[in-house]
Length: 105
Image 1 (cartoon, rainbow, N blue to C red):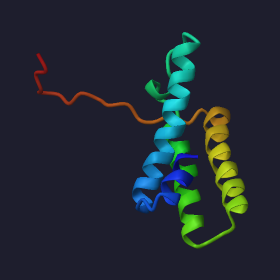
Image 2 (cartoon, rainbow, N blue to C red; image 1 turned 45 degrees about the horizontal axis):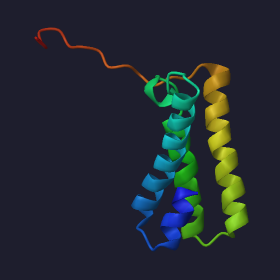
Image 3 (tube, rainbow, N blue to C red; image 1 turned 90 degrees about the vertical axis):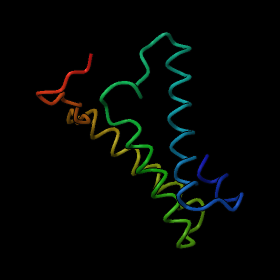
């Protein structure tokens, strides 16, 4: 939704993808906070990345002037497949590892 509105407002493709990711991410963040859960965006799960894939696909498909309904359907399926694959197969993002020899105090 955010990507579509950004494109309708003549935003650049980069900003449209960014707004699409922000819409999906912060909507889920608000949902989790209201439900009293730890937000998924703060866990090492494939969540924001799925929003990025979906939003990027939508903007790319619209750039090539694919019909709006087809672009929505394809990007929805791609985002769903990434997220479902992450849940099903246990995909996670890599964690930061401190390097030896650094003093962070």
